[in-house]
Length: 221
Image (cartoon, rainbow, N blue to C red; front, side, top):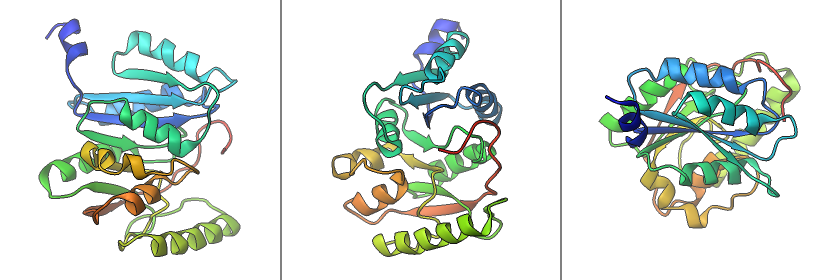
């Protein structure tokens, strides 16, 4: 297939990555996602909140050599949830994943998450630190305790037995987003919780375990 035909093909999966000051990580996540999604038609959408470290410029430079990579640079607005929403609405792919730019989420799970959505009657697959085999990694006790409290609160806010409602790593069918996007608050940083709370019907979901990894470069936001 020619290069021009490859560029015109609608991707099956879009991976949305919100960024702020992640210039040191973007090349790594492009390489990791490309390796994991070999054989899948994919695109990687970085949504950058005008990082002063040049993240958007670095993504555009990578996109010049890789047609799978796209950059959305937001000027005058900030926020993780709203960045995720904007990135998810910018694709025509039928399946959309959200993950962090710091390589703490396990991109190797993306093919399995996609397979589950394609083969099973599911709306969303969630990467979970709190199901069997999952782990929060090297968190100290203070951070672990805060996460447990937030998780308990989150589970009370939604009508689903979701073990990790605060997860920032998930994949969903595009129509799920389109079915609730006008109800989303777009505020804060827990977009998964917002989707579950805002959708007009209970969502069919599965959780897959992963171990939360240490940040490769930069500082936690």
